[in-house]
Length: 95
Image 1 (cartoon, rainbow, N blue to C red):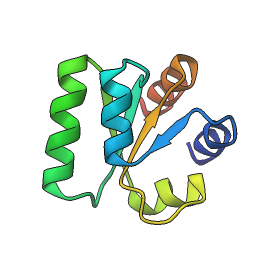
Image 2 (cartoon, rainbow, N blue to C red):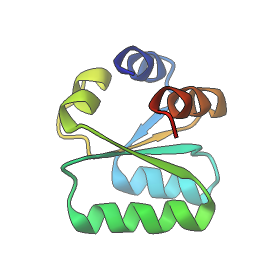
Image 3 (spheres, one colour):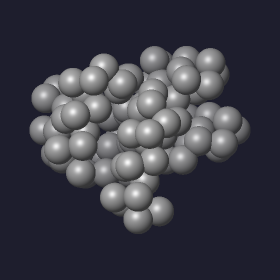
Image 4 (cartoon, one colour):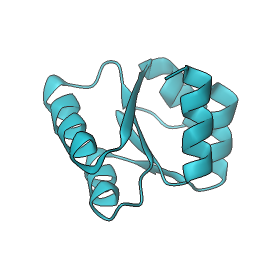
């Protein structure tokens, strides 16, 4: 999964940050949401509610794995803006 997330980041098909991901969900540009395992309950609820409303899958992944994979620190929420990459991550995670 680490290599795939890095590839998505380099392809510029990754949106980071709660507000940007919610904005992408509202515009129907986000196909998969990644939430860090140590994100706050409020953040998880906000993202979960929005993703469920727009019918987008959510993956909860380890904080260290997420941050190392994309090369950024303290990222809690990411949105995948490419349907093919989103399907690849879902198949790797086994949803």
